[in-house]
Image 1: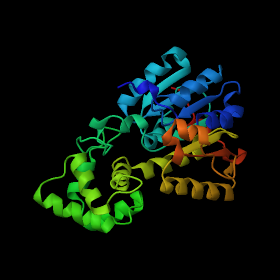
Image 2 (image 1 turned 90 degrees about the horizontal axis):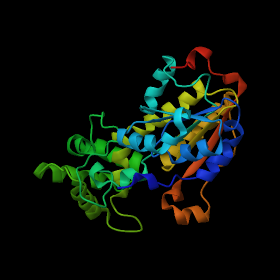
Image 3 (image 1 turned 135 degrees about the vertical axis):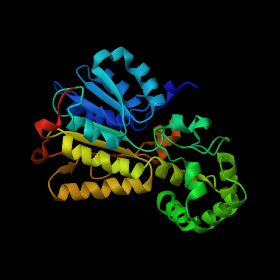
Length: 311
């Protein structure tokens, strides 16, 4: 499978919004969800003086990104790390460029290539092991959750992280099925959930799979770590850009932005999130639910020089 053809969402909006800081002399960008380097490749091409530190928790995606960024030489440095691990790297001075980053970009959630690789267990479109780990260093898989969590905990997860209104019925069906035999495959789980929820505009298992993926990869905690990292490490006037897809994660960013504004740490660049236009939605279906929020770090929240070292 050719992962190089992944289409980054809201690419033009991201480029346009970050342009005023990325074009500055000495500017560098932290792309904390590098993926296939779709955003970073374009930004490095558009801004000849820009440098990018690209990090990703998935070693397979990182290998693809390294190939995509090879032509930029030492202007692009990559590191395997979860967002929640980046604070320690900054604190240790294990950062590739001098000074504080001019911008941080986080395109949160699952990447399209993950869904396109059935063996990773993210998709219900093909039968595969029920895994869903972006970072294979994580010990807990989706199968572990499905086969060991109590019914009440499963139901709460499906409701809060998947917006599944029939969460109690789905959880009960999972517990009953696993008594007979462990649920280890995506196909079995998808059929089981669809039998409870039924069909409709979206596949019946969509919300259950979303909830499991978010829990396996601790996506809420990783998002909060991204926001906190921006507050600690961005340069004064620097931009924090977050692309979200899930209503829950968008609510987290929205509430955090309001709170950060109220204490004078950030200001919103746009009062409303940027969404894809009709042309992008047609070209890239994943962009349909994407929302870009951009915050500017105010002078009162400058990063400490000891926190922005160079490796």
